[in-house]
Image 1 (cartoon, rainbow, N blue to C red):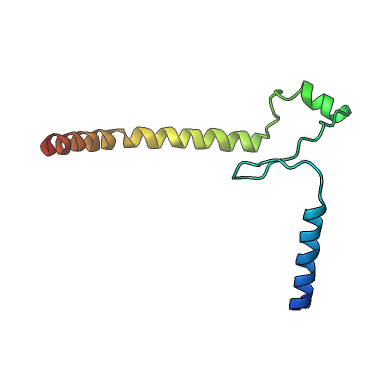
Image 2: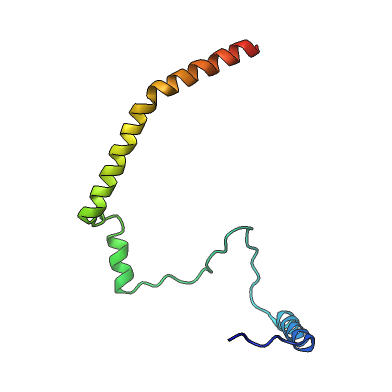
Length: 104
């Protein structure tokens, strides 16, 4: 179910309330660089889970047999494609060199 639309009066009241809140604010104001929003400078949580993660952040991940097979298969497929395209890429490079030489 859709929410009912706000009237112009309600929108104006909300905008005025926002302006008053901004005018009254006395906290720190920091300049953020344009782009993706970043988190605030909150103190880092350091409970047992965070301590474990800090110790084991570079442990090798566990990979299922299916995922490993898929990764190996796609790597093999990339190698086959590269091997198949090598002569074609040589011909293209030769043609580009000729065109560059003629353009001089």
